[in-house]
Length: 302
Image (cartoon, rainbow, N blue to C red; front, top):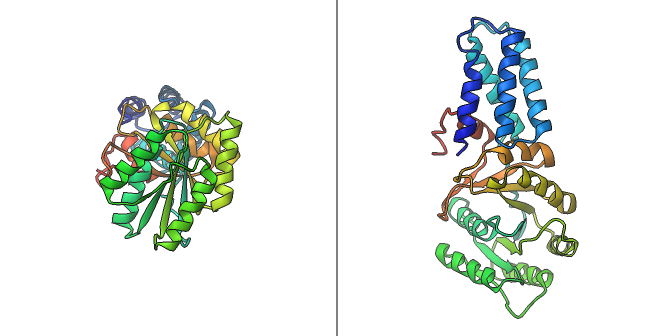
């Protein structure tokens, strides 16, 4: 994960390692290489530029720190700025409802159905919740079957009705079923949709309005890079979602989505998917991710 970006940032920050002090020249050289590394990782151009400007400003303003050599100081500044860019602190999930309703949204193929199962498994095992999965993809019978298979794997019941072709009434019925049967979390899996498909976007907005979820989450494949960020913006304009889920972070990811998305939509990344198994879900900690990107390792997550 992020190997290419880590290597390039390491080389960029290496510029300062042999220097006795920070100067405008070596800072300019370093930040130019950092910006290039970020752009190669598919980070949004504006964000990469603003990021390196902040790093430059801090580096030149902190030359009084005698305890750190220039190389260490620059690594610290880049780490702090990366952490801030990705959200600062970890964002929690709102489970204050009775039941707490979580609405999943995203493109087809983003990993929504699998992640719905991972989240249900996480809430059941780590938060001692009693979740119900609700199948609201009325367009693909295979999606309903997939959710049932996922539910069986993790021992979580699935509410579905193949006769009902209205996802809004299905979602409402699922929440009513949860309330009547003692489930305290409802995870609604919806059909994948394109942001340009007005009818489908109206449909998911109607589901949200009908069930008033505590959390509307946008699931996106991190391997799509800058496209992921653009799609997130388009979905957020319609749904005003609460948080982002990045899937497939175990793949050959350049890192652009993880770094850019928070700045573009001003919504936190809440969880990441890190593999095929149902346990491959992590709360997103920006500081730990910054450590990974800078090749510092991540003992806690690993």
